[in-house]
Length: 504
Image 1: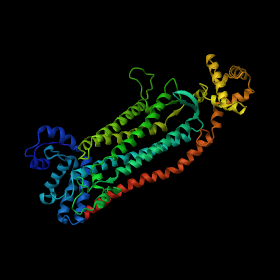
Image 2: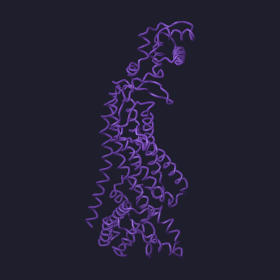
Image 3: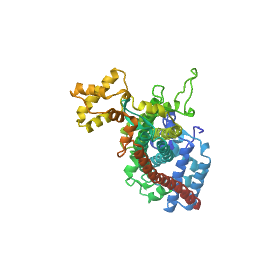
């Protein structure tokens, strides 16, 4: 955006009338220039807000048809040439630079009436909401595609038996399909949160002016409809000064990014040489500048890094809002849009990155199964089998704990457990042998049998995982329709505004 200084219209004149002097160079450079945040997208949003307000003023007979037409033609010209708008800090921020543009092209009589009944406060608040709404509309389809990729990967790996970890130690046995369904369900809750944040964001503050509304007979609902807002914030104080929608959006994005980052971290560990459970497709890795054997998971490292960035952004927004006392919210308007735009777009970027990464992820099934029983991950099944033979759970737990210690000291695995070894542990704990056969022990400690036995609601047994996949596939149409409906409402409002403007 080209920038120049000079000129006698805009905020400089507004301020000089009250303060008696021009604003300092430092005010222009360090306050109005960064606050303006003039880019072609912000200019376009501001122009559409002005067009909707102008159409409403004409409909309410607060502007003559010729006046409204002159303003609208100036706005259309600005939309077509928004990348060429010259920013003049002497004129003030985007609000006053656009007003100066309208006055220049529509004349002072018409252009000077564009802001009848309106404050910069409610207009900038609307601009922030519309900018974040646009970015959320980008994020939502990306999130849907990620969920679909996760669900498809789950369907392809219902039989991929692997170890499950707690405290990063082998704990039990699961399947990669079961793990993926767990991630899918997390993403579904994320989708609900992002949709809720979208709905809170998509409320119009326009017409609330500086706080107490206006005596002009404005049709706030019409302006909101022309801009695709789902409802109007009724209380003018609430509409003008409350920004709780912003941390709600940041929280939804932060939680989503944290969930994606957690999975990326687990993948990062599992694709290491020491674990070797999975492998990234070459398209999502890179080699070393010096070590030709390396296959470095740069994509996962980027996701992990963005997770910390999003968490920090959420905290930053809360800190800025904490100091807002119900004035103009200049502080949040200065930093909030940049923080929010970055957050929503970064999480969309990372969701878009991890989607094909998951689709092309290589499962090392043999290694997974080989590792599934390591660390006595099926020990609890042996405990359960002993309970079925008459022991209490706690007594059986003590016996198996002693058995595992004996095997660990002797460098034996679950495959080496025999009835004699189990009875030795039982005698040390209980004082007597157990009536467990070799077949009983082998079945209890087998990783595949462990998974098959977990066939209850939500368990990793293949049949149950397939049932969960089918159930979630049936629900997908509902979520797609919810996202499509919001996008269509916004798109329809843009068409309605363009038609209303052309009619004048």
